[in-house]
Structures are given as structure tokens and as C-alpha cells.
Length: 358
Image (tube, rainbow, N blue to C red; front, side, top):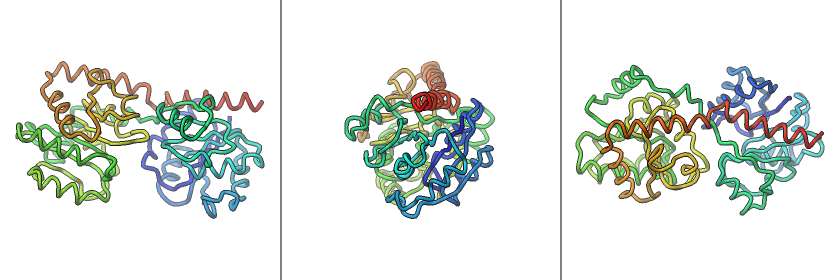
């Protein structure tokens, strides 16, 4: 089976797990190529992973029929299936579906308008809640939507004691300090303002806590100001520039916090679980598809700093055996989110589409 992956961009925040997914598909015998825009890291990572790459950019992504050269791009590889990611890629591939005579599978990672998903043979949703949203709000046929969660390269994030010590030394975290961490873009929907307020509440009772917010974005100044107003600026760590590799930050941490107000899916949450961190996450989908409160992590009400303080206090006051039970259950959970697991599920979708074409 030959599959052409089409992503209408040059860089992805989740490029590493995306390429790991393709490599896992290759191990199952799927012959693949990637079509993406030139420049950026996506083509580089794919080539380093042994995936052939073609680069191309549509004339106007929002008007697919202005890019008939897409037909030649596809025919250069002669695939059995075209698999798209992102709205514009689905729109372009769907627009030329009848001319190509090649079935199209489209993956969506967040809500999008149905107009972009015309003439698609089958859909893959990165989360169960998103499947129901796209069926209920956009009218896509639920029976044609399969759920394949975005994967994380669990082995890459596994933490050793030596790695933890090196990371804490590099970040100047003392042995007696407890480091809480959150990762993501500094934008309102990530809820880092809630986390800072929750952290300040905890600091009123404990003097051994520090908080790392690992990311970059428009709200950086606002977060620093809020931390100053709440008297915890000296306990807050924020890298000055975008961090390409968050692993040392995760390895140095003791607790991971995901306070988002909304998400399509969260690779960051899976990375933290793979790093063996006990976790507190907000009560939104898709987090509740991953975290079961009290079993493999704790859940707090999104947007409510007091509830995050309560959940974090509960975690901090657990004995070592209780926290270890959460961690071990979380490590079992992420076995369902590996690139290999996602590849097996994706291959099943390809076979369903191929069988219907035949």
C-alpha cells in the first residue's frame, strides 16, 4: 500500500510525533511520501526519518481550484491513498478527488467547517469528543469518522534518575525544591493565568515550591506581571526563548499541570505522562479521555484557580506510594498512545477505504 501524506504547512508543533507515526506505519509495510510546503522543519524531520518528501505550495490555499498542479504532485508518487492533515490540505485534496481517482482520508485535530471536508472518503478524528462535535455541529457522517488519538514517542520522553539529576542541576533546582511545570504557547486558552494564581495560593503555605512555564507567546509579559502582583515572581521560571526540546524541563519537574480552558488534543499531556510525572489536568475534553481522576492523575475545574490549588495540594500531600500508583497507571495508559498503536489503527482505516474502493 502506498500513501501520500499531504500537510499544507512547513512546520508543525507536533512534527516529531507526526514523523514517528509515519515511521511506525513504514514498519507495518506502508510505503509513504510526504507532500508539504518548502522550508521549515517538517520536510527535514521526515527526510531524516527516511520518508521521501516533495515540497509544494498552493497558489491560494483557500481556493483549491486555483491549484491544479496538485494533480501532478500526487501523480508523481502514484499513491493508493492520499492522507491529509489541516483544513486547507483536506480542501485541496477533496476538490481534486474526482480527477485523481485516488481515495482521500482526512485527519482533523480541531473543529473546522464542513466545507473543507467535501469529497473525503473517510475521516480520522484525533479525539472522541471531536468526532461527536464534527458530526453534530458540522454534519459529517459519524459512521465515516474513526478515532485515532495523536501519538507520543513514549521512549523518547522516558526519564532516568541520572537524567533528572542532570536536568535539575542545569536549571538550578535545589534538591529540597518541588518543581511544578506547565508547557505550551502563552495564550489565554492555555490557562496559565489560572495556574499562576493556584500556585500563589499554595506558596502561602509552602516555601519549597517553584513553577516552570515552558513556552513562548503573546501573554509572556502578562504572566510575569501577574506573578509579580501575587508575590511569586521569584519562584517562577520562564525561558526567554522558545524551547525546542522540553524533555529536560519535564525530567527536572516533580508535578505536571495542564490548566487549559480548551484544546483539540494535547501531545504535551502525553509527553508529561511518558516522563513519569504525576499530573493535574483541567476537566475538559480531550483530557478526560486520557486522565481518570484519582486513578492515573487528578482533574480540576477549568478556569478555577482554587480548584487547581485543591488538586495540587492533594497531590503534594500524597505519600510516595499513592503518587507512584498514579504514575504507574499513567504509564499503562499511554501504551494506547504510542506511534505503534496509532499506526495499527490508521492502517485499519486505510484497509477499510481500500476495500470499499475495490
